[in-house]
Image (cartoon, rainbow, N blue to C red; front, side, top):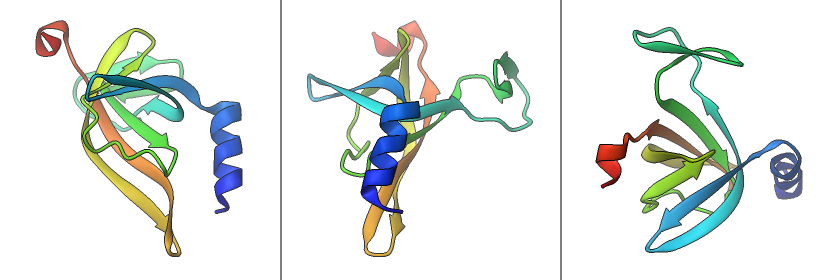
Length: 108
């Protein structure tokens, strides 16, 4: 996948999220959606049933989620559980990550 195509997709369809790392807030466009699979503790979303608090992040290849302390989306706080680059050929096409919502006590 051409980097320009991915960048255009994120700009047009991506959600606005903020990545917080080392006291710096970085606004980013990324696909950020509830994980949709059958599991105990599902919650209803506009896109269907999803495990409560688990979200999929697909972001730009140049921004590594490693070391990000918090992702903020629509006033809610998340932390990354796993992250990796997804390569196409020799280069990263995008960054994949699994995030979970933090409750207020975890953020303190």
